[in-house]
Length: 70
Image 1 (spheres, rainbow, N blue to C red):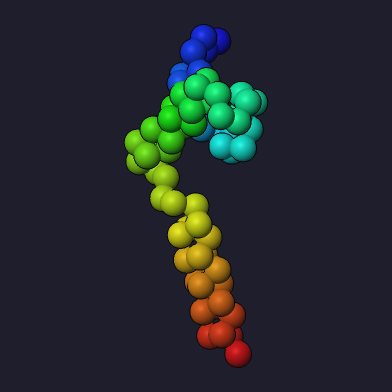
Image 2: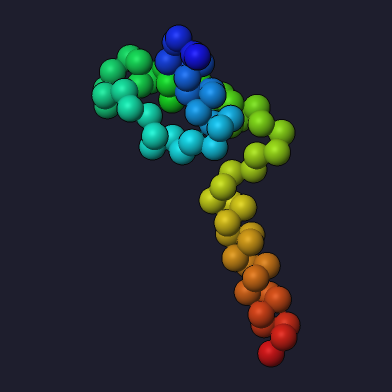
């Protein structure tokens, strides 16, 4: 089990937990460390592409395919 907040954040991302799952109090140094670990893990994940961009392109592709059928 992770003993420091940074490592806990990294593990949270690797196990598909959203950033909002951090249970440390807002404004605490432990929350900042957890967020830094989560963010570092996300930024170094070769299979990760910003989710908002991925969702946008998926929606666009779906819309294009739908339009192509009409």
